[in-house]
Length: 170
Image 1 (tube, one colour):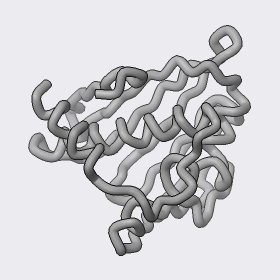
Image 2 (tube, rainbow, N blue to C red):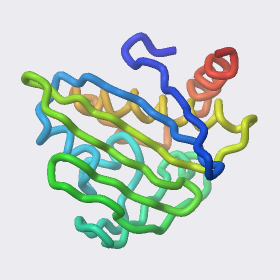
Image 3 (cartoon, rainbow, N blue to C red):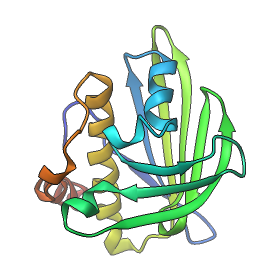
Image 4 (cartoon, rainbow, N blue to C red):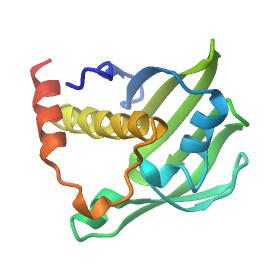
């Protein structure tokens, strides 16, 4: 596991979904974290391309996986903005990725980011889901520290495989 990111946790819901959670204490102001998680300019530096993002509840969103392009595929998920509270909550519900929520809270000079992904995920796929989000959360922290992912063509699944093995052992 990364030494800078606390491992994610999961919780089973009564409707068959899983909640994947990460909590980060980031040394960056809310406005900077918001720009990374809630703007078409910030999202591709660590997660995906926002081909469409209407910043309001009910707005359309189309998120395109940049790691898929590194593998020679194109994968985009369409959905809706299901919560939007400027500089506090951005939530997207998109296709197979489910509900993706970023909840920001000021904490001193920094920000506590509470990330939740509510998704349908079988037991055997749960370590993959955790590893995927862990990898992206590491990239978010790096992007906020001034080291964005700018060339997704160099991405490989090696690090994610190691994370998956760590989560599978937990």
